Length: 76
Ligand code: SF4
Image 1: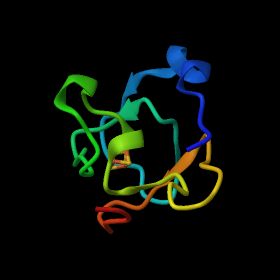
Image 2 (image 1 turned 180 degrees about the vertical axis):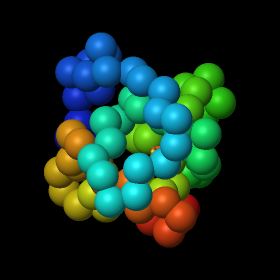
Image 3 (image 1 turned 60 degrees about the vertical axis):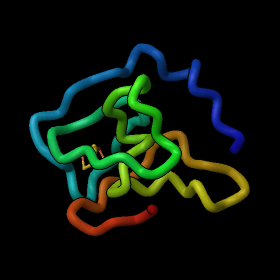
């Protein structure tokens, strides 16, 4: 993956609810966070690791800003 996580260290933010159809930053999260299988508990809740987010992780270049598709699962 070609994503530099250091670039958005300042954007960690708790959202009050999922944001279906809206942009999400990798380090945002909401109460509906559901981890995909690569997630390690130490990393905490982050949209980057959420099954409902689409960051084009299966494309050659991932997106810096993803889209929340809750409640539709995007990735295992
Ligand atoms: S991608 Fe996941 S954690 Fe992020 S806002 Fe959507 S449901 Fe919540």
